[in-house]
Length: 405
Ligand SMILES: Cc1ncc(COP(=O)(O)O)c(C=O)c1O
Image 1 (tube, helix red, strand yellow):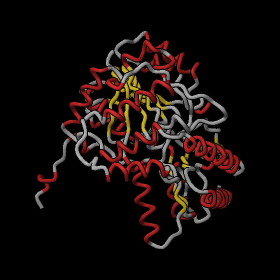
Image 2 (cartoon, protein in one colour; image 1 turned 180 degrees about the vertical axis):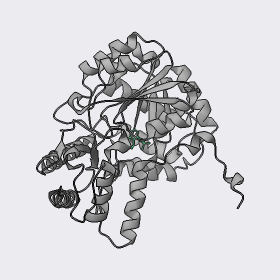
Image 3 (cartoon, rainbow, N blue to C red; image 1 turned 180 degrees about the horizontal axis):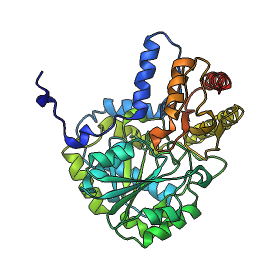
């Protein structure tokens, strides 16, 4: 075998495959071997896309909307996106200030790839969504990981932001509600971060608002450019239909930001995927302009599940789960378990070993916190039906109660 032929791009060679996808592969292997696995790993709603959205897609096919669209998206969708940003986020934008991509992920990827050079730094508060550091790495830049403690609600403080900024800082990535912790930044917290950012005009901000509609306890969602409009000239506000409208497979994300940046992202996308899927774009118009009862009712379902899951976890000796304010993840500490043995005799010395033992010995799939940059924690996605969540609770309970020193 000529190994030279397998040489990869240096940046890709050191990129890690996502820990979540790795766990999903392991689940598939265990299921193929006949095990009945409860998987709480997936970052997607368990609901179907609302029927009026599906019908809009079918109508788009029948009407022959099957050709290439403009790279930055259909005019009708960009107008709907602009209206969404105006009404829901108070941002003063027109359709020309928007871009549509193949998923929220491509918005982020385009923005980072279009702007980063070797030596540039990107501040990423931890715990973080696994893709951020990998995207930064693929763009040839350096991640500056800022740990955010549970006592601070897993949120970036103005002091730690200030300390992380250097002359090489190009971006700060803010994700609220957060994957993996469910942390939601209040308007006051964003205000305090904005005050730091105003003093550092070289820093761009990526606001990943993909879980915007999933906030609980009557809280009101805020985004940075809304709290501090002076930052809008250097903020890319990203969102999409994936989580709010249960449309993960349709691959539609969008953003608004300064035109020079949107233009660069469009140039990049024009040489890569071109415009997002035409049918999905028509479906996204229906989602954004149609009735909002689906968003409201799923939010209520997730809040009820959050309450059940968090209280179940906190009833298990050795576990501790802070109450997440949004998204559909519980991020619980397993610090008191570290060093103990499972009933089958596995020495549990890290959160990764705990997650593996849960899969192999309790048929429950979750993701270890250190994959998101802060251990020892476990992330459990509760975007799953009640019966599965109850089964997962039983499995967690039996597994942890039977650990011993
Ligand atoms: C924090 C965060 N941002 C962005 C995305 C990407 O969303 P999309 O499916 O629209 O690409 C996800 C999906 O898991 C996410 O968790």
